[in-house]
Image (cartoon, rainbow, N blue to C red):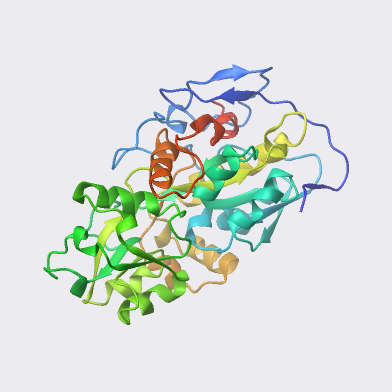
Length: 385
């Protein structure tokens, strides 16, 4: 669905900023600049972090709760959000809906249940507005072939990513797949079956490939079985596959099975997915004001409801349950996520290196990250544009 205006509105022209190295605030302007710091008094220096910092335990960008303040559109505006699941990784949208943050911007959200690869053309044509997805091969292929879609917001990463002693989202495997079941060597997965919901074009190819690379083993040395996320634990237990990438909350069942072990996690300190839009919501001459309103509500929801031990807040958990339809345990048994609206330098390029290795894209050199990311909306939203 295209952005639906109930009445015509006055378009507000904002700056389109180019991405640069250093911190996310180190951007040069492109075209006229009219970004405002109105309502961003609670977004101080901590509202941006160094763009190249993907280190474990790093500080994430934050404003004070309640910031950036709403700047409501002149009329109520309906926008579509494409997502297959209303799981915890979309908590900024779920809490923003429950607590009225999108309504405060005069935005009405309509969810569209559609796979991201099936929505790319409609995002490009602005028939759909916002897409929730990982940094998939399909996205990079589409951009390389001229599709005008960019990531405008990051989503999350597990705070304990990289620590195999902490049960979490990651690559879980049968212990009997290893020569030493008590001390699994990931290289032993060579020649075995691994489950993926998408295949080699999935963003999980990046963290799995990165975990395998030191051993000299590649995903190309394994057989990839396409299995739905909800069926993966059973496939592991039945030995239909020997390893599977388990998302929240599916890994909880695996963690209670002593015959299964965590052997790889998401790469630490970087969001591997986020929010994507086509050209209309980035263009000051079209509907960038709508894109900016969405970004403000998304960031404000993180700062207000999702910073720290949010799973211990019964109101937040209730909001997630109400908006998702999932049981409470889906949000309290997995541990908090670290929500991060920034996009870090190197994530797209590193993911592409594996897509190229696995022939998941139709090009041989990574495309520039400035064709994948548009940081200008969140920089303007926090007054750092």
